Length: 89
Image 1 (cartoon, rainbow, N blue to C red):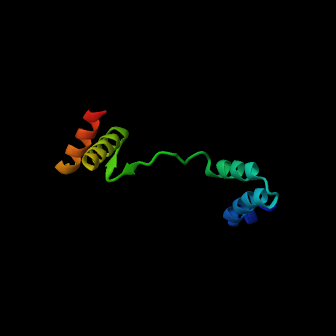
Image 2: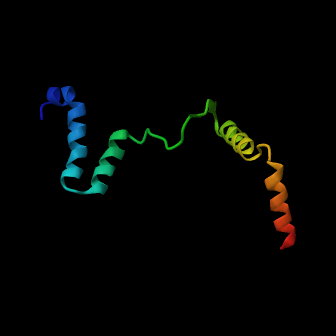
């Protein structure tokens, strides 16, 4: 292929390379081409979660979220019933 054509149609050529794997019904070939085209620049980690960035801050935010979610006010009727059943056994 002429260089000018390749330069003008880079995205189309990349898409066709990926589609080749799908056409052949070869999933591994498809994902291998996607991986090569992405140039391994992608990451599987989010840089920001819930407005927090950095692993330590995200973990702290999630910890606080679940603590708040599971430590709501306890209905004393159900707590008393649970404790009485627990103590009977």
